[in-house]
Length: 398
Image (cartoon, rainbow, N blue to C red):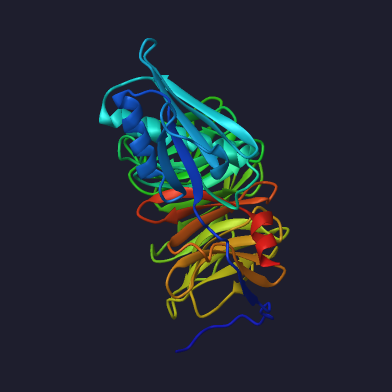
């Protein structure tokens, strides 16, 4: 099989694998009253939290409880007089609390249980001292494509109505905002470095487009042309957005940029044999992306240099996909290991497996701005957002 090869020196890649030790944390759910609704919430928390936690339910009024035996304590209490239900507790490093007006429906019990677990996770992420991989979302549907910046996580979810929409979770305040686009599907959100704009892929205009969303005015502006599909946008800086778009044949894709200030489109790549996706700024002013080689159907990671010439970056026997960087020399991506897609990091010429203890497919990794954390989607029985602590993972390597 003939394969075109650029005249470059391929970087030597050493594969390093080590365990992320995703053992379940222990949680005590303590019942602080004997109401039906409190017991229903406790059982639901145990059911939907069982991937992350080994959960025991005990009655605080009758059972002997040794709180030191657990990583997390969650108390549940329903105040029937005030008609309020609250979940509150603590973990090593901090505490959490979530309350709502009580409802007696199964749908409300599920939503309350999800919110209680998610608020716990937000606080553990911010203040917890004993985790290396943490589940952040618990909705029974799809939560994916996470981006974290300025204390907020931007991601796509089909929660509540079954339609993929863009959500913003404020970790500190525990609040949730949805961009109301119920008639379309959204993918690949990104936030500008100055926190003024979102960009994302949407079907709002009847095909795949890239749009700009002003977080102040709530205005949506289509920045891709009306006659071609466009995908996976990314803020290169505060004024430039990268994305890929169909070529004139509708069989290939090229990388484009859009200048917010001049409202100008520019084509950056021109290599017909590569079907390109998810461009991002890497290692200075280079642009990393993953691509399907149309000559042999291989899926690998490439980059454009400052002169917009394409070169292979990571090429191996297994497929790599979903590469992402925030401009540093670090790059995260998903790679097939023969059984599952794991999250890998490309670091100083080495490939480091960050999630090889997770026996499910993991995709869509992104760094936090300080590169202390990698956010990703874990596809176990459902799709949920997880985060790993890079420092904790690397310590396990030593």
